[in-house]
Image 1 (cartoon, rainbow, N blue to C red):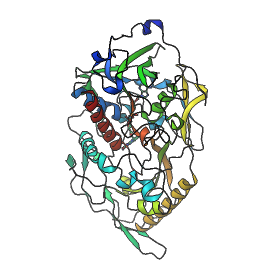
Image 2: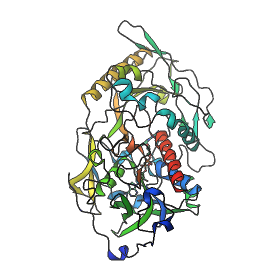
Image 3: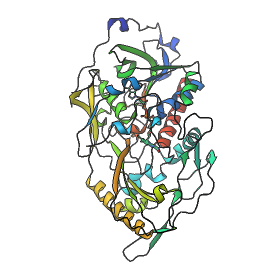
Image 4: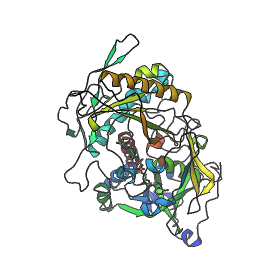
Length: 487
Ligand SMILES: Cc1cc2nc3c(=O)[nH]c(=O)nc-3n(C[C@H](O)[C@H](O)[C@H](O)COP(=O)(O)OP(=O)(O)OC[C@H]3O[C@@H](n4cnc5c(N)ncnc54)[C@H](O)[C@@H]3O)c2cc1C
């Protein structure tokens, strides 16, 4: 892996550091008592997407001085990435660099992981368990669905839920009756449940789904405890021993600056969070920040999407947007990964399939030796491929999809088209200890006292469902943790 030394800070920047006479004057928590600086901010959050913005909003509402550092669209072209594995992963289409992050691109499907998704190793001998369980996240899913203005219709086939959706969907038209048929033609009936979306809020200027620049970011900047710093690309976190004291940034003209804070939260998306930690090398952490650097950048995974436009008989058009996860346990008990099957009314009827993929260690992002981006930083290289289990999962799910289409009376032919690879995840895996991951169950980087990671980069596994509700739920859980330790 290629590494370039990060440019040294200029003297003028260094002299702006403010030294303190004693740690007591900082009012620091026990873990930060050794800090020598008077930091400018309590918390510095890097990235203004769903994770960073909702986290920052929670913090400032509790009087915590928070900086939100955002590269912004002006620096987007400096983020270079190349895909070098078997899968030509479309990094640039899978995320957005700009204020509000990928909230500017997302489609607005609001889903939860299922309880089993957190316990794949215990339940099926697959992959790893999460270091937290579904019940720990459930209250945060409720808060997240409220923030995301989820409009949904209760269904017994969803993950268990102890709150109502903030906006109730009218009862949808019944989903088509389909079965998972075994060889003899019998089989269990599948329950397709209606999808939950981020709703159209009449007060928002833009059509759905929710875009953070419409309301959340203005709300944040109106708060006196918030400082939004745009046009700054986070380059490296600089550690003294177990403490990070400052974030080094670059602007579009290549000017360095630095931000000091008691706590740093890296919420820069799956690719850039890993890349920032990889660039944050020090004598203590020569391979990237934290004791878990051996897995930093690894276990990248995502969701390929296969779809088929259906040609259905007169009067059998699909009405509504449905999904089933009923086959997840069956597939996993066969040693495969989960798949969601979607039925949507688009064009009269469309069948979609999104499998979960192996979070394989060899699938990774790393700093490139070959490409340099315009700011002189090492650019990003993504290596992704299908494992043998991924291929078997896809084959099996497409075969099931063909049978579902046949039950609907489809005459379009068996071909599925692959539309895109989306929902990047992994690279800063959450784990019980540094031997198997980068961050703990709250997102704290192992071996570092004051740096956290928020976002899908921390997912140990991704299930076969959309990530953002889980990203926001985890960010809210982290906010509670930080509020408790800082106030
Ligand atoms: C086309 C599309 C459709 C999608 N649809 C859905 C959907 O329907 N449902 C769903 O659940 N999910 C969906 N997703 C996924 C969803 O968008 C992401 O899960 C979510 O946006 C991740 O939020 P985040 O805050 O972790 O990262 P991001 O929103 O990507 O935010 C990261 C932020 O960090 C900033 N940044 C990055 N590097 C730096 C740096 N070095 N310095 C300073 N700032 C930096 C970026 O500019 C950005 O603002 C979709 C994604 C795409 C691409």
